[in-house]
Amino acid sequence: MESSNPSFNEATKLLAEERFDELPDLFDIPKAVEKFADGNISVSDGEVRYKDEVIHNHVVGRVLDFMRQGLPYKPLVRFLDKLMENPSRRAVNELYAFLEHKAMPLTPDGNFLAYKGVREDYTDWHSGKFSNKVGDVNEMIRNKVCDDANIGCSHGFHAGSLDYARGYGNGGHLMVVEIDPRDVVSVPLDCEQQKLRTAKYKVVAHFEKKLEEPMCDDYGDYDNWEWEDKESSDESYDDGFNAGYEAAKQDLVKLAQKRDAKGRFVK
Image 1 (tube, rainbow, N blue to C red):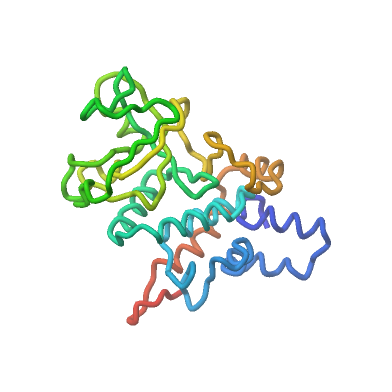
Image 2: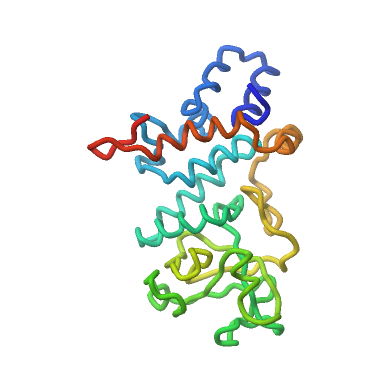
């Protein structure tokens, strides 16, 4: 097993604890995923599920990224719990596309981070009424937010990818915002799904660097979440995405892509 394999950190742990009988399951990617998620995510009959709901390819990729870097599974479970509480099925599907396209990092609480361009005085570009200083929380009634993805500019708070936020407005500040998946209303199609509309967000930081890792805990007080084997995960992360990791990822993602005549996923 190469160090880039999603199960490498867990395999190292089992070897150190002399739990040799558990090692074979780590070479079976579906079983390794189930073990990593402590039974919260299951793979059976060609389907990857969470609480009996088939999950999207994007989440499958996130699971493997978390496994590979030795990150805890709970942020993923919290993200899925919140996502399933979003009252709009359409918004859920659109959010998958946004996150998959731009790989926005999750927080330990199960929210995700995005970017927002604001004026020099930290108010929003559209109305100039909403403050966007670090710590500010902006919120509006959900049904006041446009839920039609075919309409580009409309009512609602906007945030997006780094490219989108940098190109919005003229000057001002670039901020990092935290968004609860439950509050997302739509992902407009006009910007190649690089922006979204939400009913609520929190400003957590000034932009300093592009957020590229699958999880970020820099902008909150997360005393109760677990980071297992951090030193070994950092070392394996530096190895890059080599053939072993990519092969494992493709094996599992294929399960979420192919369907038979009954709509079930097939190998």
